[in-house]
Length: 253
Image 1 (spheres, rainbow, N blue to C red):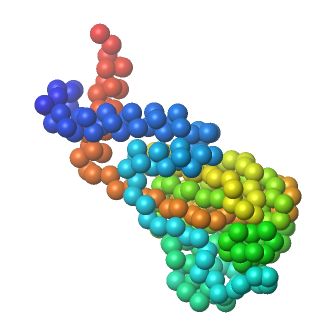
Image 2: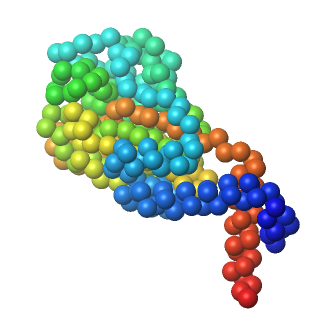
Image 3: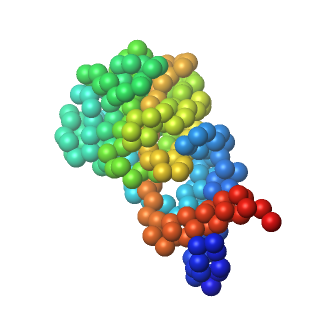
């Protein structure tokens, strides 16, 4: 048993709480950019290590490969494309709890603002190595909306077709509050990686993609989704540990 200002707690719970606090420090060390409410990673190895340390289960991957369209053709599809909802060349819609759609507000995507059409590009077309869905115009940006409210982390490959370019990602929580933004190189071969991990009580509600150079029409591929399943005991232990630290800070010996 461990004695705290709030009484005795099992030593195992205290160790779990300490491990959680240490994990937070490790996540900050791994991240490329830490902003209030979100961590960004440009290394898939660092991102994988972070979600493993945080003990976030893997929900699934949306790779947009449910399309029946083949190269060399491209096709416009209706906006939006949603999990389980048939849409043109996607007879079953997306496989994961997501909705993808254009945002007519372009560089100021303060709220979702879908347009009317998107562009489906199959593997082998426009230098793409896999099926991708991107904006049909460079005058709009692109939103991924998370339909599962528990999403805590997303790993992805940023996409700009043809010769690639620079993309900006903006991450919003479930209340549509901006958590942070990150600029990254993007190309059609999915050679770049961005990992996003929400901190604190925030959950990821929306990721917006904006092309800043090159062909524009930025989007993403291979969305790996993670969500937390913390035990009540660990959460209580963390609260107790933090309370004890705050108490000692207010009353130094």
